[in-house]
Amino acid sequence: MTINRRDFLRYTTAAVAAAGLTGCRSQSVQPRRPNIIFIMADDLGYGHLGCYGQEKIRTPYLDRMAEEGLRFTQCYAGSTVCAPSRSVLMTGMHSGHTSVRGNDGGTPLLASDVTIGEVMKQAGYTTGVFGKWGIGDIGTSGVPNKQGFDEFFGYLHQVHCHFYYPWFLWENDKQYELPGNIGGKREQYTHDVIVEKTLDFIRRRQDEPFFLYVPFTIPHTELLVPEDSFKEYEGQFPEPSPYINKRRHYADQKAPRTTFAGMVTRMDKDIGRIFDLLKETGLDENTIVFFTSDNGGQTSGGPDLEFFEGNGPLRAGKGALYEGGIRVPMLVRWPGVIPAGTTGDHPWAFWDVMPTLAELTGTGAPEDIDGTSALTSIVGEQFTGHSQQQSEFMYWEIPRGGKLAQAVRMGDWKAVRPSEDQPLELYNLQTDIGETRNIADQHPDIVAIIGQYLKTARVPPREYEPEPVLWSLPAEETGYVK
Image (cartoon, rainbow, N blue to C red; front, side):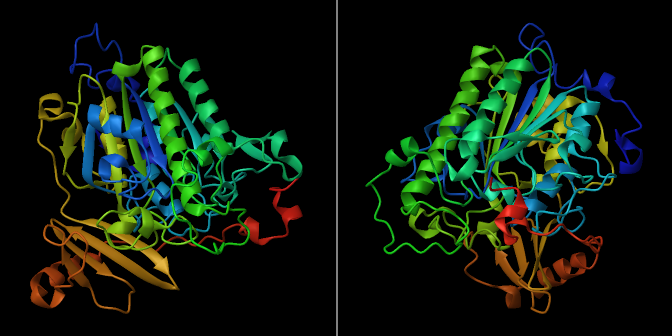
C-alpha cells in the first residue's frame, strides 16, 4: 500500500501490519510481529570493525553479530555528515529531497514529514529513541515526540552531543539532570547513561512489539572515555607527539588512539549487553537487529583514521562524497530467519530503511519517498515472495563552501562532482573501489546519462534560519555548563 505523505497519517494500518512476516516461522516460535532494533554508531568507518577487516580495535560482539547474521558490503549512509544523514534515515528521502540538508544542528524536521517512527506507530509498534537525535531541538517541530516516538532520551541538538560530560540530557521534553557532571566533574559518562535507559526500555516494553532506534554518540569526538576502557588499550599504540587538539573546545584525553579504540570497544560491549538482555527476556528469536554508522570515519580532530585504516580500502572519509564518506558497515541479525555467516552485496542506503521496515511489518509507506524496500536482500525471496528490486540511481549531495557537491551511483558506476562548478568524475566501483582512476573521458555516454539524471535529482532546500550553534556562545549561555 502506498499513499502520499500528506494523507499518510489519516490512515490506520495496524490491522494490516498484523500480517507482517508471521508466515516466516510457525506461530509457536513467532507469536507476534518481530521487534526491531536499529543501532547506529556516530562516525564509525567502514573498516573500524573486526568483521570488516579491523586488526587493532577489538569488536568481538559485533563480529559475533556478523557471524550469526548478515554482513552487507555495499550499504550507504544518507549523507556524508550527521544531521542530513539522520534526516534521510527518518524520512526515506535522499539528501536532495529530505528536509534537513545542512549540518548546523538547529534545522528541524517539518511537521508534515512522515518518519519511520510514525510508520511504526501506524503498524502498532511502541517506539523509542535513545541517543543522538540531531534533527530538531527543543521547541521545534522536529523533536522525537512530535515525529512518532513514544519515548526519547539523549541529546537533541547535535552540538550538545559533542560533549560526554554535560550537566543534563533530555528525557522527552524535560531536562534530565546529571549531578555527577555539575561544576566540571566527570562522573556520569553520557554513553553509559543512554545504554542503561535503552536496556530499561527493552525490559519495560518486552510484552509488546517495539521499534527501538539507538543512535549512539560513540565514537564521535570529543575523544573521552572512562578509565576502564582507556586501560584496555593503554600502552598498545604509539601516540602522536605532541598531540594537538584541533578543536580547543573539546576536552580530549591526550592519547587519542588509545581513547578512540577504547570508545569503540566500549560501544561493542554495550551492544553485547543488548543481545544478552534479548536472550534473558526470551525476545532474541523474535527481534531483528540492525547495526550501522551515520557516515564514514572522521578524517580530522584526533581519531587518526589512517593509523586504524578506519575506512578500509575506501577513499577519503566523513564529509566527502567518495566511498569513504558514505559507504558504511551494515549488519543484520534475526535468528532462525537470516542464515548465519552470510554476506550481502545488494547496494542500498538509508532512504531504503523506511520501506524495508514497512514491508517487514506489513504496513504502508508514503508513495513519494525515494526509498525501495531491501527486505528481500535481508530475509530472502522465500519470505517476501518477490525478487529484490534495484534502484537505477542512488543520489547524495552536501553543501560545501556555498556550493553544492553531488554524487550518483548507477550500477557499478560512481560519479562525483566535488563542486557544482567542476566536471563530473567517473569511477567503476567493480574494478576500482578506492576511486583512484577517474575515467570520465573514456565513457562520455555514461557521464551524459548521469548528467541528465542530475537535472531532476533534487529540489531546492527550504528556507530556514537555524538556531545559533550553541557552543560558539559563552558557556553560561549554552546550558551545557553548570
